[in-house]
Structure formats: C-alpha cells, structure tokens
Length: 582
Image (cartoon, rainbow, N blue to C red):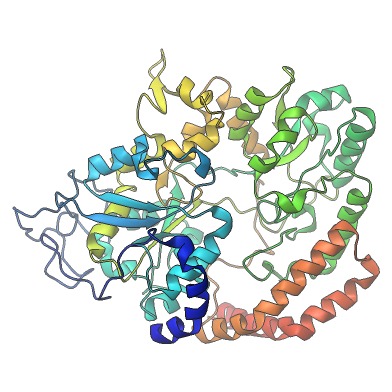
C-alpha cells in the first residue's frame, strides 16, 4: 500500500522536496517495533504490573513497575525515575510554532524549556517546525516519502482518515498496544470519568491512535470580548449585550459615534471555534479549510452546518453587517489574533474572539492607557433562549501527538510522551522553567516573570508561553491553565470565562462524541467530499461578503447536494441510525 502511495505522489515530491532538504531524518528500514533493553519481554501492552525489570537497563520505563486494575490500566498516576534513558537517543518531533521568527538560530531545541526537558528526560529531540500555514503540504510530503517524524503533532488530523486506517496501513502506532509504557495518559483518561473524553481518545475499545492534550482545569477558553471602555463611552455594560440585535446596535454606535474603523473581526475560518458566535442559531459559522462543514443532529436527522435554514438566516444577518462596514474586510488574511494585533492595540476594532489570557498582552501593547477589555456572553436570538449546539465544556486541549510506526524505539517515544502526564512532567510542561517563565511572589504563589510579561522582543506573554513552556495548541500534555492568569489581575480575567458556561446545557443538536463512521463509510465520504468542501467554502464566503445574494441560497444548497452531499448525508444517517440502535 505504501509503494502505491509513493508512486502516486512521487512527481509532487520531486518538485518540492528541495524545500525540505536537511529537515527530515533518515528513512527507517523497518516498521516492526524492536524490543529495547529494559522493556518488558512480553508483547507490548501485555506485561503484568510488578514484573521484574533489568536492573542495569539504560531505560526507566514504567512497564512492570505500576499497579493495574482489572482493565489492565494504571490505578494511579506514575512518577518516573529520571532520566528516562541514558542512551543519548534522538527522537524527531514534527510540531508547530505560530511565532517562528522568535526561534533562535541554534534551533527550537536550544530554547530553555525544550533544553531542560531534554536534560531531565535524557531524550534528545530533533524539532521539525514547518510554517503553520504549510503544515498540510509538509505532512503530505513526509507521507509520500515515508519519512514521518517519530512523533507527529496533529499527525492523525492531517492524515485525514480514521485512526483505524492509519494503524492498519502501518503509519501510526496503536497506543493500546503500548499501554504499559503510558500509565499516566490512560489513567488520566479513566480518572476524569468523562464519557465524551473517552469517546474522543479511543476510536473503539481496541484502538487509540493519539495522545490527546487534557486540561486539569477546563474552562471555555475562547469567546467574544469587547472594549469595555468603549462600552462605557456608549453608556453600556457587558450585561446589556445579550442578543444579536444588541451586538449590532453596539457595533453600529461604535462605528458611527466613536469612529471605530472595523468594530468586529472575523478570521479566515470566520469563527475561531465552531458555534461560539453562531450559538443563537444553534449552528456553526465556520469555514473548514480541512474539509466538509461540521455536522449537527436535529430530530434524529444528520445535517451539515452551512446548509440549513438556520445557516441561511445567520449568513443573511452577517451579510447585512458586512455591507454596513461593521466587519473588517481583511478577515480572509487572519489566521489568528496575532494577525490583527495592529487593529486590536490601536483601537481600530473593538469586538474580537479571544482568550481572556490574551487581554493583558493587548492592554500592555495598546496606545490608549484607558484600554480595558471584557467578555460577552454567547450571543442569543432572544433573552432566555436555550442553546443546543456547540457549547459542551471540553477537557481536551488542541494538542495531539501520534507515534509513527517507523520510529525505531517506540517504547521510548511512548514513554517520553507519557512523561508529560506524570505529576512532575505535567507541572513542568504547564509552567516551564523557574526564573524564565515564573517566580514565587511574596505569598509563595507562582507568578509570571517580567521577561514573560514584557518580552524584550515584543512577544506577547500568551504567545511566549507557547514557546517557553508547553504549547497547548499543539503539544499533548496534562495541562493546567493557571499559568495563563498568573499575574496581577489575572484572576479577574479567568472569571470572564465563566460567562461562557451554559448552565444545564444538554447539547440536543450535538452529534454524540462516540458516533463515527466505519472505515468503508469513511472511504466513501472521502471520495465524495473534495468537490463538495470546495464548493461550500467558496459559496458560503460569497454569501458572507454579499457577492452572492441570499435569493440564491436554495440553489446553492441543491448544488452541494448534487455534487455529493446528499450521498454523504445518507451515509452519515445510516451510520447514525445504527449507532443509536446499538
């Protein structure tokens, strides 16, 4: 199967391989895990807790050294003896960095946090950090060359098929086969006791394809925030802004009374998180560059967002706001808040989706000393409306890591990843090195250093944290958000996230997290989805900016159905009905 892939993609590889010369590792000659000294002599994943381990082993693996339950998983968190290895082995790690301009000439691995992790664990990491905007293309090149890194952040996401496919096709490891080398990860998944967490982490009871980042202290991390000082200028408070009509009036007055150029910002994907602005319509205002729109289920029927009557009503409203000049027309060029920093810090915009932890950065960088930001609640169509889609509080961060079958020491790679879920590894990855990221204050509490709060090269504290400690947007760790609010006034910012918690939320329109297609169904959908996804993204964008009149909505939906969406929905419905029956 890999030979076929190589042949089909060889031409593309030859055209662009020069771009990546010197970035990869040597192609391994085998995909079969080789037993390593000190590891269990049983088949990986079957060793029994308490079995004897070689005393002179160069590895401090967990296998055989922790107590298990009847399910074969650890009964508590496991603290590793460090270093994990004394062999000076090097593992390659394909990950992501949103601010590569701040990586020193010596490379990402030379930075204080990355270097300290290597010193503690004894595992040396070769970091491969392609530009974020070209991650998909770079992944395709590595896949074509059969040269995946040992550890791939978001690897399964860019692979684009199911974990079962990835494992059966021998690209990525089934972590359940190596669960004795990952006691902390699997204990954390079971310990938190959230069915939605387990349904996401496990593909089924036999397959787990990734380490998924897990929050110790989950909150809704993102939502819409507004310039609080501008609200006061208009005689308003955050409590006055509840409905879409309230938001429109606020934006209109900001533009016409306060002279704010572009009161509202959107991203390339429109929403940063699906459903956080479209909440009142119980849908997602989201352009999925990786494929089809998001699904929802209404009265037992699977629907695609971007195609329903709710989406029509929402996009019609947005087109009107766009026509009125309330939305920044530069949105297609914004991957994230950093790309619109100029407007945020100069007061040329006032209503932005952000994490409250970013607010201090914007205040510090702002020209106006009176600058203050606060959060607004999820938008509603009318006061007291019940929200039914996209508001589930998640224990999952955005980070995932998968282990490539081509890795020459899979137990070591799994162990290294699992260390970040251990008590010591979790704490260190969440906070980073003392003296660089944090110090103790007079009350003995951890607080961010002046270096982080006022980075000498102008890097905002929340972006700096992604480089000087765990990157929770890409790295898979057992992660605490406390670091993001460890400064004067930080607690008040954290409290802003409480406005985004929906009391009594049941998620009636949410597709159950345990629902998924079979491999055959996935293959059918993938074969149909390419043209449909392109068509939806192009047309939905045109409705948003008013290039396409809303009178053409029904024709647009029918066009999507004719291209293959109708068949895709039939496949999803069949799978959903079977899931519910089971």
